[in-house]
Length: 159
Length: 179
Image: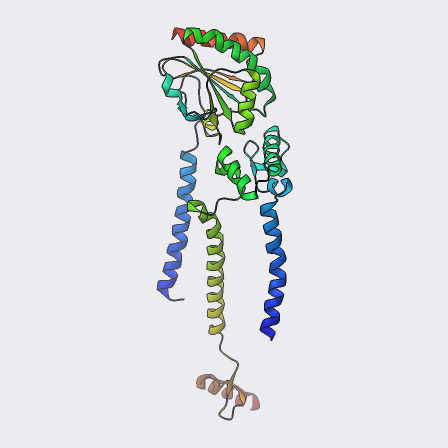
């Protein structure tokens, strides 16, 4: 039952997102594309630029939106016009795929290193108590040499 | 940590550092050098603006060439275009070739621009700006005069329709014709 509730909750979260993504793909707006397309002259995204070159590209995007092109089609046309550097995010294929994979590999690698270090650190610390035969937690017995010295000191105190 | 694992991790970290350093060196050594008057004009082989094949600067070796970088989003390019067309009509009779390089532009806009301004000299597209970068453009319009041997003879930043630039341009092309 709990699993069913969790699955329904996950669906409730994912479905609206999927719907928004589909709507964005089929009916893109200039505002969302402006953040994903570079101005080749100013080397910023279009939404950061008021240059004439950026203005031309924005006008081109508006024309393509009005013509009914999807987001992917518009991006393809922009790449055809200006080359792949026109896209703010690198393509997800070929050598450019590395730009997407390396951060994930880095995060996973870092997590592994931190996890391993934490595991090592936790193992190095010896427990303060040990379980006795009856299952009771008892203080860890002292090293015999240390115990002997301690007794000697205590005897010295009593004298 | 086992010694082998520690050594392995150190080797990976070192390899990463060496890789980054190699990338830095590659980036520095492959940076385009600023183009200088007297040096060889950077070669190009670009698609024609009308879509009918490609044009290479080398295809006019032995002739004086005028390479003009322009774009539809550039105001001075509009004011310059009648002067360039006039100069092309004058100099083509003397064997000079003009090439317009449309820089970082939408092709359909550029074709409309060419039709509107009645430009008849050959036009190519530098769609990603790589040729413009090789010529070390500071903006558009910029015009380069290339002599018969393929060397850059003169460079004009800004439109050549102003009186001073026009005179200097004619002098440069005449000098190139005599070279």
